[in-house]
Length: 328
Image (cartoon, rainbow, N blue to C red; front, side, top):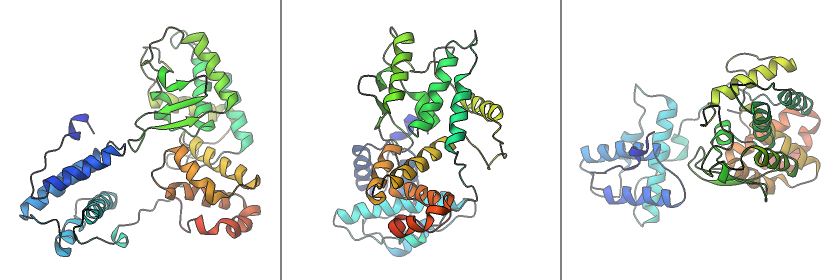
């Protein structure tokens, strides 16, 4: 999605409502680019049907959300979700549109189950990263790679978030990362463990003293950002060194599984420390940058499934927040 697509001109009789709705979303910190594009199509649909009243009828809404022969379930799901959010906005404005029920949103399922590393495997993986050899064509990679992998596991960052970090985003005094415009278009602050913060400070003092604040915190050999694939290739190399079998595409371990592992290990530690996970889940959701608790709750389900010795106690104490469905 290119930045130019953020400026959409609506032409239907509900143009002012659509513009106000998008403005509200962006005021809340969302980029709202892909959804604005869906609303642009909805706007053309409304114009084609000469709609002027915000009291959208049931037949009209159902005609819009009906699955098209050429589209996937996920595309239809996104269309229904966006128009439902718009209808809720109209209701808050005192209008009376038909509100499609959530049961109409197709449920996506996937057979993929995240690979969750053991603590011992994580230890071996990071130890192998620490042995990254220096290379003339990639200055400081023997320092940068170990730090990146520690951020992916230690903070549960997405690889794109770690690689987009700029010098200004890493508060070395407070041990705080600023993640800008993450997956769902929102910024967030991520505290870093003291030991990892100390490593980041040592690296910055040694190599970033005169680096501009808007430069990458982890510069690639050309001074720009590392490509995600470079880190994925390095990850595959570490798996081979550690003797952790790669089970093939779609089966993992994937680089993103370090994030899954962070979440499961954190929940397990909280559980064993007696923390109320119902209270802790929103904290973890905010830390990971989730837009809702749904994705975070599924980590609790995975934690239960991976630890049969704890499953009865987990369901007894936290069954109300463990989803009873397959992990996506």
